[in-house]
Image (tube, rainbow, N blue to C red; front, side, top):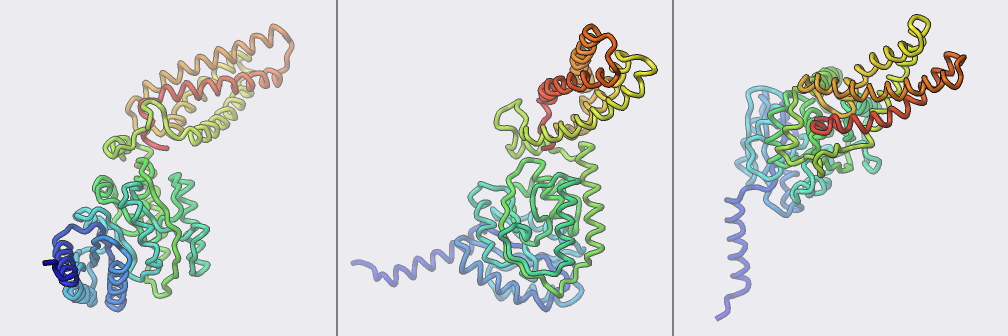
Amino acid sequence: MTANPLLRAGRNEEHRRESDSTATATLEVVIPVYNEEDDLEQCVRRLHEHLDANVPFRAQITIADNASTDGTLAVAHFLAGDIDGVRVHHLNDRGRGRALKAVWSASEADVVAYMDVDLSTDLNALMPLIAPLVSGHSDLAIGSRLNRSSRVVRGAKREMISRSYNLILRTSLRARFSDAQCGFKAIRTDVARELLPLVQDTGWFFDTELLVIAERVGLRIHEVPVDWVDDPDSSVDIVDTAIKDLQGCWRVGRALASGALPIAELRTSLGREPLVPGVPRGMVGQLVRFAIIGVSSTAAYTLLYLVLHPLIGAQAANLCGLLITAVFNTAANRAFTFGIRGSKSAGKHQIQGLIVFAFALLMTSGALALLHAWAPGASRHLELAVLVVANLVATVCRFVALRWVFRTREGAVQ
C-alpha cells in the first residue's frame, strides 16, 4: 500500500528538523554588543527571520556581549532561550575585536560573519556576502559603502572621515580594499584560524588589521556594494577611534617593514604561493615601485655627480655617485618593490646588488669613455646627459637582474 503523501511529507519535514538540530551550522553570524538592551531584541528577531527566509543552509546567531553594564546580557539570554539557533557568548572585557576573535576562533561553522547591532546595512546583501565563501572561491568578504553602486545615507562628517581613513590605508599600507570599517564582514573559518593569532587589536582597528594581513598574504577579498543608513544614535567616539586607527596603521606598517609578520609562511600554509614557482607576482606593481625608486635614485645620483665632479673628476664622480645610490637603491627595492622584510639575507642581497651595480658602472663608464674619445671637450652637462641615458638602459637591465636576485623571497609583500 502506498503511504499517504501528506504523512510522508510530514515525516520528511520532521526528519529534516531533527537533522538540523544536530548538524553543524554552515554560517555563524556574530553580533558584538555593549550596552544595547534597547536595540538587541529587535535586531536578533529581524536577523533570525531573514536567515530563515533567505539563507538556504543552517545558520546560527551568536550574541557576543562585551562586558555590558546594563540589561543587555539578560536580554541576550532571553533571546537564546526563546529562539532556536541563537546563543550567547559573554566576555568580561570590552572590545569588538576581542569578541569577534573569541567567537570566530571557537566556531565550528564553515563561514563566520558579523554585523553591527543597528543593522545599518541592508540584510539583502548577506547572501551575496557569504556565497563566494561557502563556494570556496573567496576567503574573506566585506560590505563596501564606498563602491559606486552602493547607496549610503549618512552625514558629510562621517563620509569625509571614512574616505580619508581609506585614503590613509591606501597610501601608508598599500591597501586595495575599499572600505575597512563597514560593520558587515565574513570570513571562511579555516582562514580565520590562520589569521586571527596574528591580529593584535581588540577594538575597532581589528577589521583593518585582519584585512591588511589577508591582502598581503594574497587571499581573495570579495567586496559587496551595500545599501547603508547611518545610525544617528551611534555611541562610537569618532575622534578616539580615529586616533587608535592611526596608531594601528603605524604598528602594522612597522611590523610589515621589520618582517615581524610571517607573511611568506602564511602564504605557504594557505596555498597562496605564486602559480609558477620562481616567478614573482604583480609585475605591474613592481614596475611602478621600481620606477619611483629609480627616479629618486637618479635624482640623488645627479646631485652627487654635480657636487663631486669639480672635486674628483668625471669618472670618479660617476663611480662614487653610482656606488652610494646603488646601496640605497638595493635596500629600497628589496623592501618596497619586492617585499622582502627583515635582516635575513640582507648582506647577500647587497652583494648581489653590487654585482648588478658593477654592470651598470661598466655601461655608464663605457659611455663616458666613448664620449670623451668622440668629443674630448664635452661639457659637464653633455656628460651628464650621456650618463643619464646610459643609466636608463642600465636600469632596465637592473630591474630584470633584481627580479632574479629576489626571486626566492618574493612572497612577502605585493
